[in-house]
Image (tube, rainbow, N blue to C red; front, side, top):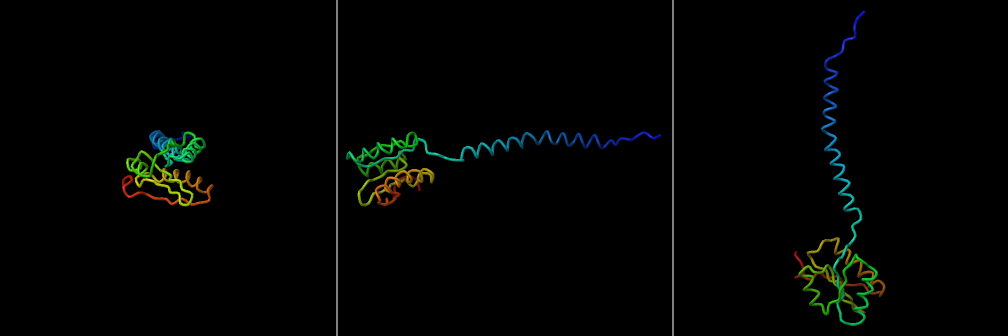
Length: 149
């Protein structure tokens, strides 16, 4: 009778694979966690206290600002400004993302050049909804001196 011989390489190979697996599991779990965190952060970005303004001192301008504020909730921080110059100054200082200048025939949306595309899209969407209800398209302007770039 012969005794089965065991190979010395078999335990070493098994030990090496186990050792390799233990060292790879932590980085793999970290990569998975980072990917899930990244996806979760950018899955559905929504504005939060995005600063916008309605330009004008009339009761209609204040009413429009109040209606937008009521509809938007925490997504927008809506204020009124007395004139276009004040709006452009706050856009330049990056105190605002966008400003809406209401006009029955040619309303305007002012946005600063230095704002992120996401912020500009959100501000544009808010005021496009307003002009769509009026049936008049808004002209969108990025004042040359407003923001960086």
